[in-house]
Structures are given as C-alpha cells and as structure tokens.
Length: 80
Image (cartoon, rainbow, N blue to C red; front, side, top):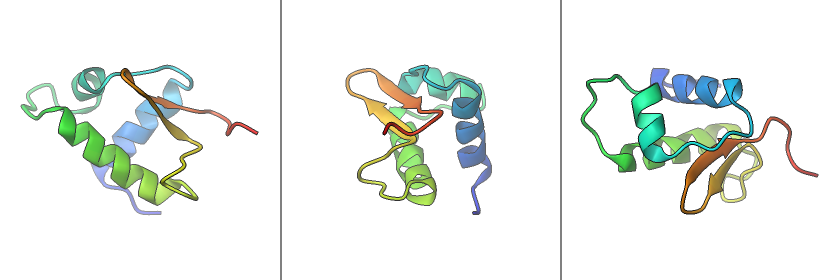
C-alpha cells in the first residue's frame, strides 16, 4: 500500500501508542511539523484518507477509531 509521508507518520504514531486517545490538536503537535499552522480539519482529512487505505470498510473502521468529542485511537487488535 502506498502512503504519503504524513499518512505514514500518523499511522506510525498510532501504532506506537495503541489504545491511547489523541485529540486533533495533540496529533497536530506530535505528527505535523511544529511550524505547521493548519487547523484540526487537516487531521480529519488525513484520518479519512488513511482509513480509505487501511480499513476493509472505511465507514466502519476497525483499526482507526473515532472517540466522539475527544479524538482518535488505534486499536492494536480489531474488536471481535
């Protein structure tokens, strides 16, 4: 699968912290360049694109979960 550099960095961050929830602002500060002046929409778009690449059904993700009102988390193992 082909990922952009940012998609790879985002996936790597989540894989190193399975189960931990990160807000969009936390992801911006940890994954994007510290000088990046984007907004949280950037994270939302990258999450959608990453899901389209790694999830069997992006509309019902098993790996990259949304934690409503907080942010996102990576499931190290899909729920059964």
